[in-house]
Image 1 (cartoon, one colour):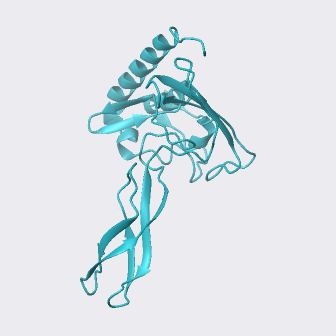
Image 2 (cartoon, one colour):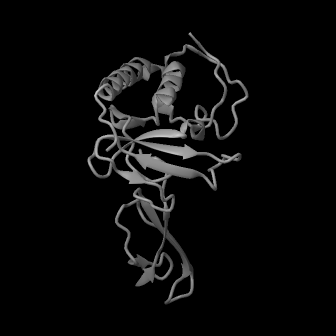
Image 3 (cartoon, rainbow, N blue to C red):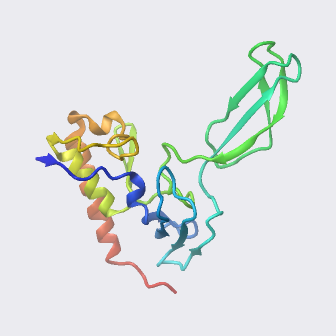
Length: 211
């Protein structure tokens, strides 16, 4: 089986993203109108999230429910050496943190600056809601935005011949982790994605109308 599809970036599939509704925890749809320039991340996009089960509606693109990461770039208050520090991703940011200088080993409290964290976490890039379409494979989590995204990924994984097709650095395929590309995981990934698709489509047959 040959995979010779275009080298789509992940953002190509982001106009419709199925997420977990933050109100009722069922499948909700986040729809985004993307601008002309989408890479590396779209600016000036318009997003709205709607849940057909409970009527949840969110349109504020500045609302962020996902992970945050705190940073500090400063000088040590004791010896004047440069300090560069980053926290682990969290959904509960805090203002101050005790940080130890690597040079003089003194520990002091510093104010952190927090930014949206999007990498390696199964959340949508616009609101930060947890993705609905995700599955565990061994010790890893595999996620997709929608069924088109799932089909594209499954066709790639299932292929025994994968053409390069001039893939650029933002190509989704190029940035997949090694365990997804590995042929030894082909069967289990295809099996899990197929199950995920079936379960999702079965659930969509019982979606309630928006109230």
